[in-house]
Length: 386
Figure (cartoon, rainbow, N blue to C red):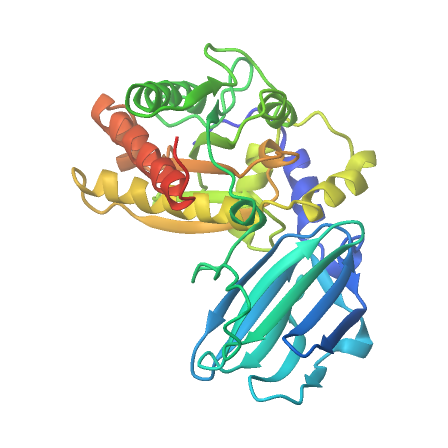
């Protein structure tokens, strides 16, 4: 049976909070209440008035031809729900707007790629997103840059790269984290894997690597992204080992900051957040910080690349390596990070097979190698030199 430092009461309180329906939480989404357009002789411009900075991505889809813009942490004013703006020209049919999910607004331009090209950009103060659509038959107009097929986050739109990585070995000191049946402690595994990852990054890449701890000391979860922010990190990677009440459950999973109503995510978050020093009086501030998170897209992509590379690395030497996927979750160690941030649960200490593997230097080295390869894949995807 696993040993947990904090009482079940604290975990139950945490679970009850994050399992509340979203309707009972303060609504921190920005409301979009105006979408306007004008057709000029040389192009058509649509403006989405938002007011506050919001993460967004855009891309194109064929059959039928269309361009979409997804705006995160946003909601539509009821007057715009399902609204369609008909446009009277031969290269653009219409613009549609809808609430794609509870926190994502999608704007779609139905056009003809044989007759038109487009540009998506934004202006600050007040924040607004602009879609310019040009008829291809006007050669005198400069061709604007085309978006990447996978969409473009603000980080990619600004052409930002990676130079400094902060690695966070989970737990430490008086907080052992999860403890396996053999007595193996999460804090020891996390520090060992983090050190191996640092050594690989520094020997193979032109990146500066900083660790939140290099010895067995205690750091509360909320101070770890503070360190990353102070060091002006470009990436934040927090390393942990998982546990579950079922000793049969095994696998690797990676997380980025977001709300969740998935019971397994809630349980994992409650355990990882158990040493937080914050009180219930800070609940509103905590919720708003999560809702204002503007790195969802890049953090999710970083988590996906690390997850896939880690599973691939371990599968080369070990059988039945299970991927539990990439999920959003309310982890204290990720709140407040001003850079793409992920939490990696490298294996389950509660599972006998994975606990034995975690005792092996070979396994830990392959874990570090897999995370390294995921980081490099993400860095290279930005198209920037290092």
